[in-house]
Image (cartoon, rainbow, N blue to C red):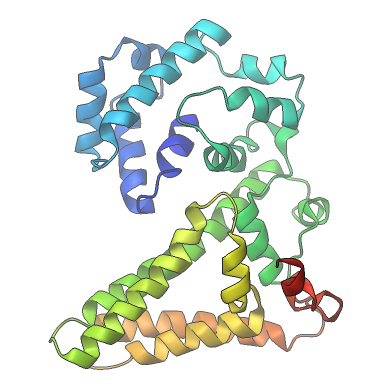
Length: 288
C-alpha cells in the first residue's frame, strides 16, 4: 500500500501507475525482504517495464529507502509503526511521513487504502475526495458517512478511492475527446480540442493536489457546485458530439454525468455543497 501511494502521488496517469504497481507485485517487491535485496538497477528496470518512465530513477531510489526504513526501524513489518503510534491517526501520519518520497498527498492515498486493514485509521477520505462527497450530497461528516456504510472500514476505503477514480476518469475522457478533435484537422476543431484538453487536465489534475489552491475556488467555483459542474460537463460533452465515434462516446458519458449533477441540484433532500449555501455567499470576499 505504501508503494501504491508513493507511485500514485506523482502527476502521472492512474493507468500507468497501476501498471507499475502491478509489475512491482508481479516480481515480488511487495515482500519487503525481496525489495530490500534488490539493486537500484533492478528496481529501475521493473519500473520501466511497468511504464513508469518519467520518475523511474527517483522511484527506484525511494523504494530502496522504503525497504531500508521498514527493515531497520520496524523490523521488516510496517504494522510495528501502527503499534508505535498506539493506533493514533495523527501520530501514524507523523511517523509514516518519515518515509522518503511520501508527502501529504501520498499519505492521504495510503490512508485511503490502509484503513481497510488498519481500522483505527477509519473513517478517512482524502481532502479532494471529501469535496466530491460533498458535491454529490453525502456531506463532509465522516462519522455520518462511516455510519451509513455500517462502520465497515473496507467499504470506507472503497468509497474514498472511488470518488478519486471517477474524477480522474472524467478528466481522461475530456483529454481523449480533445485529442480526437485534431482529426481531421481544421483551425476551429484544433482550437476546440485545445480547450477541451485543458479542461480535462484541470478536472483530472486537481486530484493530484493535496489542497485546492484558493484561486481555483475564486475563478472556477462552478466546479464545486451541482449546477455549475453539471452545466460544465454538459457543455463539454455537447461540443464533443460530432463526426467521430470516440467523440460521441466521450461526449455522451461526460454529458450524462453532467445531467446527474443537474438532477442533484433539484433534489431538496440532498444538501448542496458548502460554497453554494445561502449563508456562505461571502466566501469569496474572505479569500481576498
